[in-house]
Image (cartoon, rainbow, N blue to C red; front, side):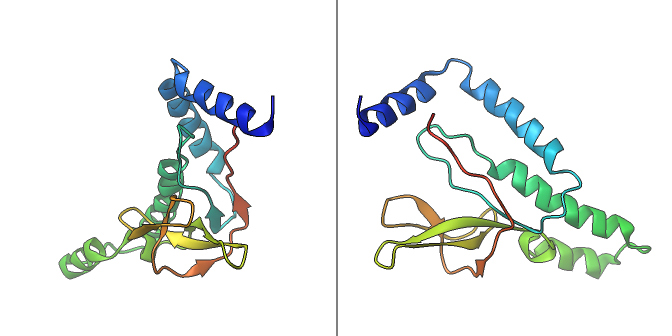
Length: 149
């Protein structure tokens, strides 16, 4: 079997797994536990396609945990105006932790990572995969990479 046929068969097999969602749920929980206490401030991941595991909810929780830790460490709770200001700020802008998604430049044959957050404007890249639109380039110190088989 050639590489393309093998890849296609593995993707079909992944999509046909009867317990795929249960496995994804378990992997989310394992990933959240594994991320606790990590010193990384920028993690690169991927936009899941073709039944790939989605790491983004666990990463968003990791990002959110840093904010909650900062806010609980603060000796004073913000006043009413402070809470209103916090509510209007993006979670990503308040966290010292960043999540990056790949941006492929097909012409230059380069791969960079750009900041991502839930609700981030997205557009399709040259391969039809969503990527962050007009966000800053960031440099991950840890990568989560999907594999086919």
